[in-house]
Image (cartoon, rainbow, N blue to C red):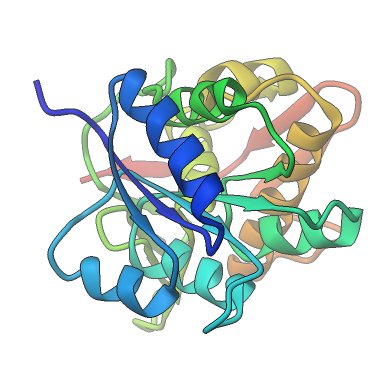
Length: 233
């Protein structure tokens, strides 16, 4: 059985060693990099399942890199950073990160969060990668939304998880608890905030009126309902 591959991008050798040792003991393969240039070159040869990315990199802006990885790579992207301010966390999630872990951390927590992110959604009902709804087509293999005129709108891995959950359960209430169980997150304020960010970004990409969304409805105190007519191809 193939072991999942985790890439570690951090300019601190001690952090890279700490994470690599914990992950390999837990059954993962790892590749470690201290510079973004070497990391990006390795992506041409290796397709990771998870990318751990520090924001304070010496040769590139970490947030810009996270955004590009989320849009282009399709892997789980987890930020590891000493930046603990709320705005840093919000920005990282808005740019497409699946999770945000603050330094210092316990390696066992990182392992647990990676396992949670790789866990298969419990509500998955289809293996199709293309779904059409209300003038839109979602291509999950390419991480792209396409409107009726053929205009493409990219979405991130994190956003794809939420969108697929909605499209697989149209016109049914999805509670916060169901989202947490399906997407493998830990029940917490940060998880709720991450969901809010992803849903807000999906509404923007679907050109929803934020005051009166037609497709993704918030049922206050209960959860969300996706009101589109969905056809899987």
